[in-house]
Image 1 (cartoon, rainbow, N blue to C red):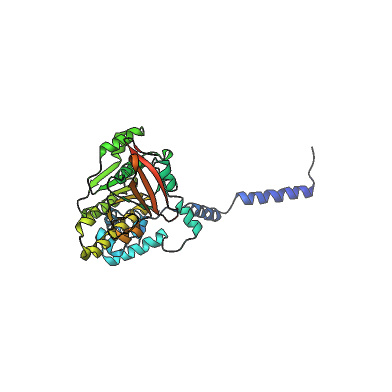
Image 2: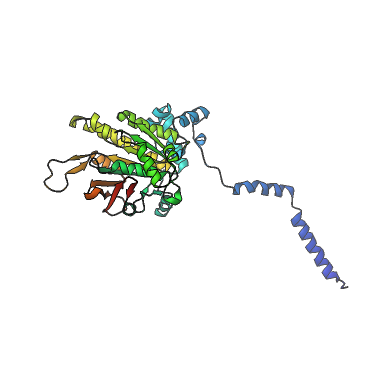
Length: 355
C-alpha cells in the first residue's frame, strides 16, 4: 500500500471540497436555472385571440366569418373586415394592424428569405409532359392561372383533369387536397371525372367526394361562393379552386360601354379575393375565360380574351388554347413572371389529357 504524504492529503481534501460545492448548489441558484429552462423552448404560434381588441365574442365572429389565421385578417381592408365580421371599422383597423405585425408581413424581406418562402409552393401535374414542361413542372399554387380560348378548345377538359389530379397523392404528382369548382356555365360533368379517374386507377367515388361543385347564377352569387370557400377553408385542405368560366356572368350583366367601369371594378375585387384565397391556403386558382373577336384586326389572330387589362394584370400565368388538326390542342404560354413564352401540343381523349 502506498501512503499519501501530508501535501497529497491536503490536495485531495481541497479537491473533495470543491467537488462537494459543485454538487450541493444553493437552492436559489437551482430555482433560477429551472426558471431559465422553459425560455429555451419554442414559443407557441400566435392566434387571433392574441390580437389587440379581440375578446372571446369578437374571436367567435371572426371565426364564423372564415378568419382563422392571422394572414387572412392581415390582407383585408378595414371596410371589408367590418362588413364580413360585423365589426366597426375602427375596431377592424386595429385588428388588421395587429395581425400585420404578428404575421410579420408589414416590412421588407431579403431575396433569400423570399426564396425560402417560395419553396412552400406546390405543383400539380396535368398528366401531359409537354404542358408541365411549358409551365416549369406543373400548375403551381399561390397563383391565378387563366386559360382562355374559343369554345371547344379544351378549357373545361383541362379544368376537369386538374381537379382529378389534385386529389392524387404528392408522390404521384398531385396535392392530396380538396377542390372547389365554381360552375357558371353548367359545364361540370361528374361522368367525365369518373372516366378520368378510371384511366388513372383511382377510385371515382373518393375523387368525386373531394371535388365540391356549386353552380353560380349571377356575379353576386359567384362572389358569394368565394366567401363560402374562405369560410370552409378552416376545416378542409383546399388546394385548388376552379372558376369555369370567370367572365361569363360579368359579360352578360354589364352590357355596353356605360357599364364597363363598374364591371371592371367588380371583376378586379373578385380577382383580389381569389388571389387572397390562393395565398392563404397555398392553393391553385384555375380560371377559364371566354374570348371575343377583334373586328379591326388587319392581320394576325383576332381572338382576344375578355376582361381587358384588369384580368391581364391580375393573372399570374396566361395560357391561350386553340384547336388544331386531328383533335389536337395547342397551348401557348402568353404571360408568366419567370418563364419564357412557348407552345406545346396535347390531345383530349376519353381517358383525359395526353401528349
